[in-house]
Image (cartoon, rainbow over all chains, first blue to last red; front, side, top):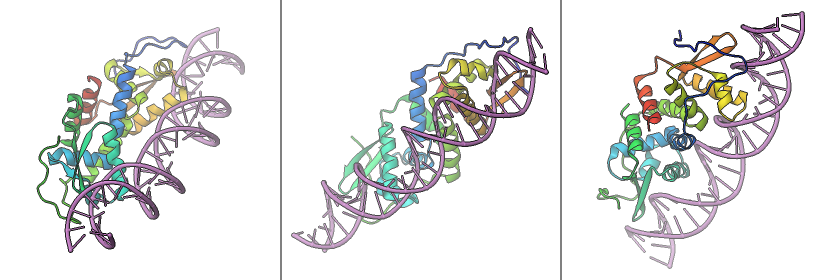
Length: 114
Length: 114
DNA sequence: ACAACCCATCGATAAACGTCGATGGATTCG
DNA sequence: CGAATCCATCGACGTTTATCGATGGGTTGT
């Protein structure tokens, strides 16, 4: 049962909504979209827990997806500014960016430890 | 510059990742997908701030989208278990569900006040 | 009863997305 | 040098998504 319903309403007249910043909505939605996939979420959680750079080949070996698909998902995380990579011989290591905004870091922390 | 790179690696051998629960990833990704849209995020933020039921017609009046599109987005939020509705005469009021899991509530709180 | 309003659903369409196989560059081992 | 490994990119394919117009059911005011 809902409480606190508005008192009076007039037909054909709509009330103002609590203001919501459009730029905030766009930016936050982009961030959430980058995370809103089981594979990418698994990648982020693994990187969060690893506390150390992880080789792409370890994702390819652990997740039941093709190598191009893994690469594609990691690229999405990179474009979203969530991860950075470093080449080391044959291997390429990824880690969560160290300069993540505090809010982003908190978001991930909340998700991973849920 | 990345630090803490693993020491030795063997070609053709992949290391195990920190374990990540697949069911957690699926469920969390679904929740994030429901939120990963500017329109739906705006709706959720408005409902969060309103602290009271909001009529659909107010969203239709405020957001520059057609009425079916607004209805569609609200349906997605309902299917995700985020909102509930009550009919009041001609109008239908939506509000955030009161029985949201604590983690979900915290997630929204963190997003909205960012 | 009729007109006006609110809203969900349906059908359609274009864009975005997830996935894969194939290809090619870069690096290392023998 | 040649073979093998790692990985990003490309092209293709089917699915999902966001959006709209049209329709219809439900409710209220005249």
